[in-house]
Length: 246
Image (tube, rainbow, N blue to C red; front, side):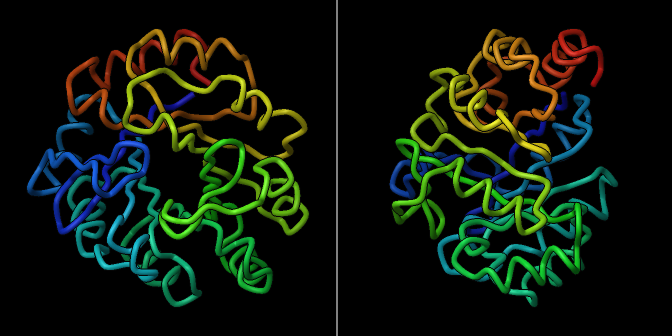
């Protein structure tokens, strides 16, 4: 299982939201590249980048920042935020991102997800952002009536094989992961996913690793490492030890 340090970019800065609320924002680095450089120096093997401006506006706006990170550091990056068209996916791929994350546009526009799967295959990742077991859309600003697991099943039928499962209620709260939701999502999943939301301690990472779910390939962590609750390197070592380096 791999640790993915999160870099959320808003207004050109690295920030963190609480529960997906743009009104509850903490800015950490004026330059996202410095955050990325710090995590890589501490042992990060890949990075998770979200263009929050793009998520809110519907089109990516911070891809230049992504390009600076990929060209400078040379580590794999997955990026999301406003990737709601084939042109946006192409622009994100051109920034050097290895994996491309789309949100509920994948459910609202079946033709789009079919074209995206055909063009990008396993590079395509769908983020299913959950609040109360239902999906949120438009950069977490809108609630839907779609259940997370039925949505996952429909996307798998359309060829999607990689997912992010985000627990919005726990995001940025350091309150612990929703292990029940992670286990339910893993059940009968044919592809793989990474979990995001609530990680505040090394024990939280241990709890996810102890699920022993082979489809859970990683965990996204943001606020806990920005606030030095633990280091990237020690967290990755814990996950390697708990999962045999898988």
